[in-house]
Length: 436
Image (cartoon, rainbow, N blue to C red; front, side, top):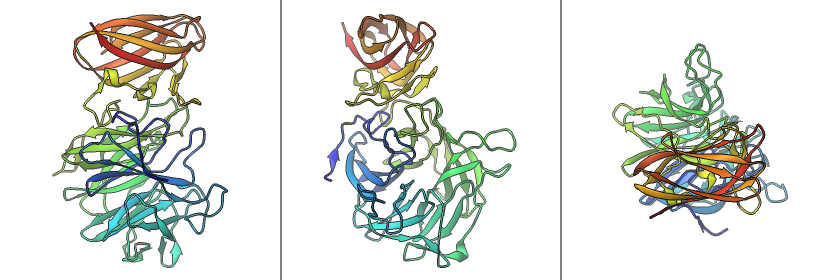
């Protein structure tokens, strides 16, 4: 499959809305940033049997390329493909460079873990081997690899993170370096759920992870919608939980897990993560937020969930899809329809969505919406919590428009719907244009 330049503008979700890439591990190789993740299929569950690699120039993170299938556990007929021992679904991966080779670390839904190699960061990856220690296969999920001073450290696991150093063959773990329970979800611990990503910030080791931590003892069993981070002076710990980097609760009514990592691209720091859709734990899209990092002390600021992605703000006229919303409320959610539309559905009284942040100039705007009605209802448009317009959506129409004024600035745009007690409508499209 040849490379495909994607139609993107940098806003969240930063890949086209029909591409579902969760568990993103960003890596910079040369002058490009690469995104390695698993792959959800709309309407399915967690992941599938292939990986794609995506990349963008480090100096223009709005221009993403899909490099196609880089690795498969099974072919289109369900037969063995690139993994000699399994046809199970491929879960979260990571990639590291050693010399002139790129090593893809992968795990499967059957609990097995492996590594494949390529001459290119975009793959394809081949020659897959099991990860072993003391001659036995290692099992678990969510591998992560950090190169530090010529040594390669490997982490993996769910609820209890394990770590060990890789041998020169990049597939064997040194048993004498093995550490169990580096971070855990034990009582009073770090709330580790899964998805460890081992990074180094300054002289500190930092683990980004899906967290079920909560402030009340025993500090566990919350929904793992957060990416938390823990810091240590030693790669094997002890690690102290320092805080939350991002929380994807609110992106979908059934948001469940989160997985991703932090990276510095140029002079800016970002957190990559995912958000689910379709009122499920699945159908997860790649998202990104800017963060601030104190590199000397390895302190990471908490990101706000936004529609911005890589942009300073989303220009009002550039909102391409209802899927650009960063928060849904009242039971509303975004889905996918045949033909490539992404409507917001299950809209009930006081339900709706929010776009944070939209860049307006001072002046007048015209809002046009396309909708599928189920009864007469009203759409209230607010900017920074102030009512900008109330627009009637008649049940015998499918389009409506209104005008509103607003001041210049980066603002929170929200759509809230009012009507009867049932499902009111589906928001299929909208367009905002400045005039006058």
